[in-house]
Figure 1 (spheres, rainbow over the protein chains, first blue to last red):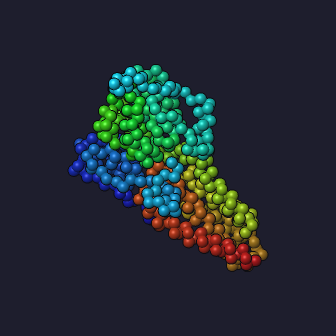
Figure 2 (tube, rainbow over the protein chains, first blue to last red):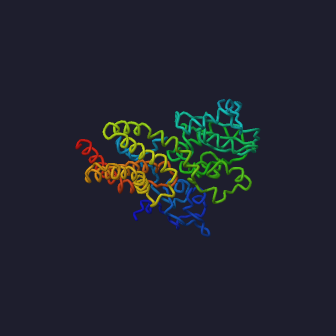
Figure 3 (cartoon, rainbow over the protein chains, first blue to last red):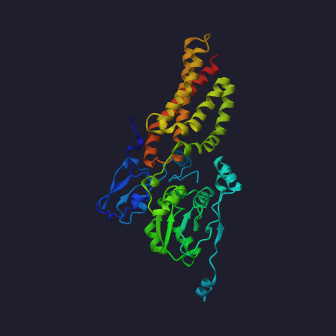
Length: 90
Length: 331
């Protein structure tokens, strides 16, 4: 069965990780966990691309194309010809 | 000279309390039914909760009344400062996604409120969901204040403050039945106008049953779907919506099939099919629009889902509508 949420844009370079644990603290879906002195991706499929980890990674070890996971916003952007969808609720 | 003046001007601190008044609860009610959604704002700035001293903690929040009130009411019996950012009346998480709950705004407010003159420590406690807009290391560099991410929910703050460590459960965002139920009034309200217009038009095209079908599939998407979300089969919102819409369409299809023994078989089957094609498409479309209200869908996933299923919705809906038009004229 097709699951649209199996893929996402999150990537993590463990070699750059400084082990500060910030990604573990900010992730609302427990995508990261600490493994010894480094972070590791424990459930990458749960990522919702909010961008909190990348924003707070001082080592630049995390990259994710963050954006709103909202169909209403994307449909609105498509209809009004705007490039970057943003929260219509906001 | 300028410096001297600014040192002698006392920082402006507003007063607040942890007690919610009847007026606050009325405001919360209005937010929940979607009344003037952008206008539930608190004045940005620094607030004193209770009787704070220079050692008291500083909590940062958004200037949306629900955010501010959730924070202060969770801090009953605690003397603290609350730094309210200008997020234009938007909650913490959504504002962080937009960047209005963000590094620049924190830096601006810390300077504007002269926070360094008010407290002796150098720590800001932020809600965890502010993190998508805030780079903690940048705040430290630009203001001298260390950012500490507290729990997701303000209600967990008393527990958090005991150890200044958030348990894993406090770091997880949830989307429980109660969370989803509070969204229902706004969801239904957002679909009320199309629902009434469609019902009105369909009444003249096909009578009461058709009008009822329009109401049923839109209500299924806006009210039943959020409630049943985790229990509907499959992972994608669209397929969950198709499933739910199919179940709701079944009685309508059966009424066409079995309720008119006087009709020829092709008309019974055709009008039954009409409901089975059009109704699930509508429910699925409303369902996919709920992705943004949920707490876990990624942009990549929603985009993949849209490309896969919106064409299916369009084709099935158009086929159902076409059948309806044909049968409206072939009497």
